[in-house]
Image (tube, rainbow, N blue to C red):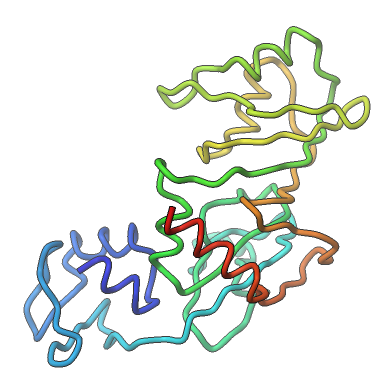
Length: 230
């Protein structure tokens, strides 16, 4: 059921599982379960009161500015959300997270299956960031960050750490934990003052201006889908 909802572009597969568990999905008027089979030809599926229809897939790359929240719904605070910037007729959602203080590459899509494959812990893509700190790292700091730090009951580390200038570094992650870079840097007594994501897998930010977005090219879409099949 969750896979069917994701394939229809309503939301990610993970979010679909949450909606099913909350009783927000009905099939032919009956509350659905996770393993309920669906016949697309005859069954009527309602999600959060909305009839589910197949959408054409959309893939968008946004250069998210700082101060913009990676959400499709506005919270209690009046912070701008990504859908204030990216306005398309299709229902889209961000793939993964990029905290409001950070900026850079964010993928948005209505392809729930692709989003699931890109964010699942067993398949998460490499992510590359340019990180500016309030103080330079010492050799001991660098060794600790690349060897691993305990965070969220897991060992978190930088898979690549390259010094670009006195306080600026290129960082590569293979995990995608909440505010991972900021918390790792804070654990060694320093602070992140600017964080920009520039790459996810083979998808690069390039020279796209901050606050602007574009549709992915056919080559980029093919690359993401080929990775999904691995």
